[in-house]
Image (cartoon, rainbow, N blue to C red):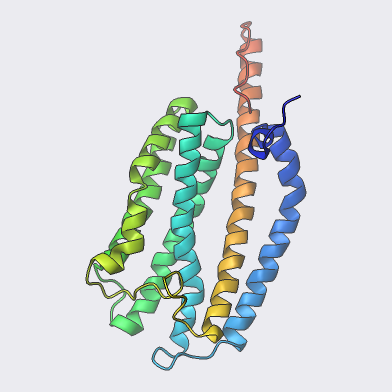
Length: 257
């Protein structure tokens, strides 16, 4: 008997549904606890910045949202690679579920960044390299969703969307290193950098707690969205089978979902 890896076992949608159904309540609960604790630290423990005052606390939403905007697209790209190269049964489900979530966190990063920029820069928006590249990322997410919804045949939609996702992955290093490559108003990396974080622990700890909470929330939402997509495909397959049966034709086998 061959030993299956965890990814091989989870490639079975039925097993994924069973495992995710057991895990989801715990993941939702952990996300709620982390975010609640992060908000407590934000409003009752984190001091105002000596330059930015209480405005600095927008960072506790903006920075995790920006990280997840890029992390969400990376997940879409990895899932797309899994679809095109390994034909993983759940790869397209993962990519389709992650795209709207990534777009949501990208929009949140842009909105909170604008709110933060107004008191710091005197304007809600500048065509800064970091801001412009994140806006392009948002349009990429919208493009992925628009392309998928415009093609009725799901196999073709999945393949073309996966190709576009892999083509667009080059925007991620541009976003990451834009503050180093160009002269921008956006501050350079102060957490993920060589030499350690450049933020005091009174600010860093709430930021990391909020980042952990947002990440677990993303995982829970992604898992739930994947479950919904699997159920949608199952319902569609059953509906098509009923139509085939009613018309007297033999239904085609379902595509593994």
